[in-house]
Amino acid sequence: MAGQLREYRRRIRSVQSTKKITKAMELIAASRIAKARARVAAARPYAEEITRVIEAVASQSNTPHPLTTGRPQATRVAIVVITSDRGLAGGYSSNALKRAGELTETLRAQGKDIELHVVGRKGVGYYRFRGRTINGEYTGFSEQPSYADAKSVADALISSFVAGGEDGGVDEIHLVHTEYVSALTQTAVANRLLPMVLDASAGKSSSTGPSSSGGLLPQYEFEPSAEAVLDALLPRYVESRLYAALLESAASESAARQRAMKSATDNAEDLARTYTRLANRARQDAITQEISEIVGGANALASAS
Amino acid sequence: MPIRVAIVSPEKEVWSGDADMVVARTTDGDLGVLPGHVPLLGVLAPGGTVRVKTGSQEITAEVDGGFISVTRQGVSILAETATLSG
Image (tube, rainbow over all chains, first blue to last red; front, side):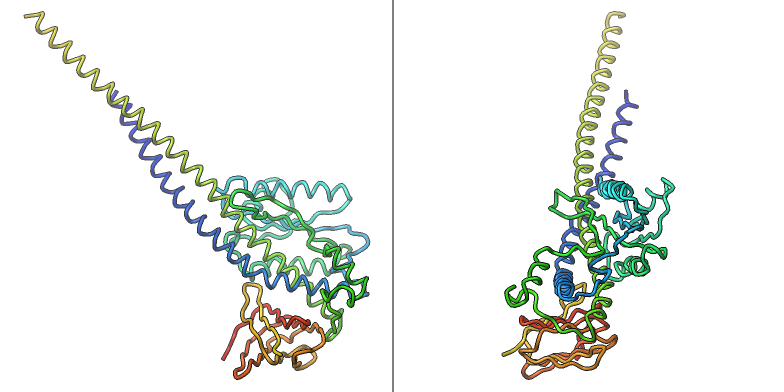
């Protein structure tokens, strides 16, 4: 009886120390969401400006450029998957990997070869376990990405895109990341990074001419030339899109972790409560038994005398 | 009539405000922008500086590569790294 009581007490202690850890992780994740959200907002002016500029250039320049028009026969495509470095974030990484799997199926069905670029240790582990070739892996910054990190991912992609599918590079770049919808919802999404998906409205305004488009996309002069500007824009565009995706994913990762840790903390509380009840009952049973033993012993003595 | 100027790097907006003139070095040479300049898109030279004149004072920013975009609405300097100096 006393042994059982001791066992319950031990479990309560263990559950409570687990709860302290999950609670701490929950609080850290919560503060990181706010930080990541602020950085997403800080990165927005640059990203918006660069997209606007590219749309303006693309709608004016008549020379086909791989950045905007793409290559007629896409044979090899790159998929960039953004996952987390650490676990304990609910379904965060597995949702992104699932989305990447669907995208891979679709592209394979179109007869395209896939090249994998994986961000985050969880994704690297996933593909390595399945024996898939990983063409690029980038780890160690999933929670707090910097622009330099985005650049390191973009560099390999850009040189491979510039080379083109026939020369061992790629013709398209697809990106799978997790969008932060709200603190409760994060969805894994797949987008095509290159060639650019141009806004339909931007194309329309250029065909009607700048005078009737209300000055939305001004007729630019280029220095040194439209092609040179586009060439210089390509890497900046990829970097800025990747950086935005990394930040958004970092916010999602923290949100997913916060939610997972919150339910772990709640669960620990429930367990501690259950074990406390069981321990109390075990203690009460032990006392009752002791009393009945004493009473029984006393009665036996009394009847013997 | 002043022009609206914004110097932005990927991580944050470095500086923004109204200015009388902007001087930047593009790959083709120095370029001065006054109010009413035609829309222009230029590639900035690596390791150059951008000077922004506002009334009495002058703001200098070290920019490493990037673009200058001039529109009717204003001037944006898009730089990979930009730091204000002086």
